[in-house]
Length: 67
Image (cartoon, rainbow, N blue to C red; front, side, top):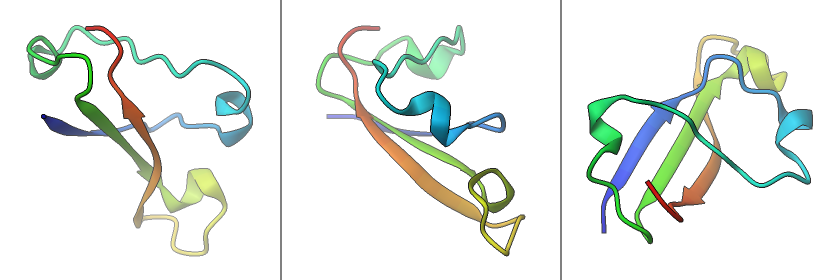
């Protein structure tokens, strides 16, 4: 199992609810992912309303369905 952490600078919590989580990228780090691997998504505190706007926060852990 492979774990990859990705920073999402434009993360919006309201857009992520109730939808199938999709990540589109052509970065080479994603090329070898297999179903069952995990994508850990982080964003800045400012995007999720925390006082420390520059800190990183884990906002999602998505299992890879296909790559």
